[in-house]
Picture 1: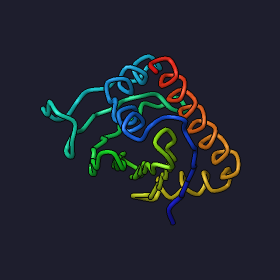
Picture 2: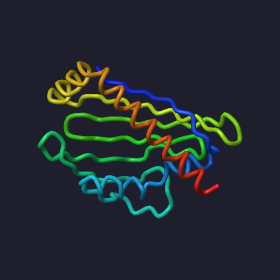
Picture 3: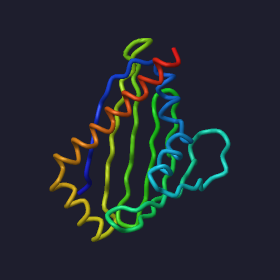
Length: 157
């Protein structure tokens, strides 16, 4: 009974640059902190790779939420997989990159959310009721991210 979100965007930038963007974990950490989340690394790795982890704490719907994130696949320049665990749900975020040409990359993003207990089942059930709206918002966020990556590429070119 899991919930699936998918999105695909084409980015006017070489695959190596797009991979560097999707693995700029420091930028993601800063962005989350700017939006009020507490982010702490849960590993001691210096180089990016499998095993990197984060403890993230943020407020959602009036309650504090704790999520453990772990980088479970790191395959330059093809993509990454991040696993997330919270008390009620677990999620897998898979980001795949495909070189369409030397200067164009397809970004495929797949998010799967699975309940861990009754509270998680209720959450996933309510997400399914709002699937159209949530899916649209997910695709919009991925599209905005792709545009940001493209803009940064144009400025650095």
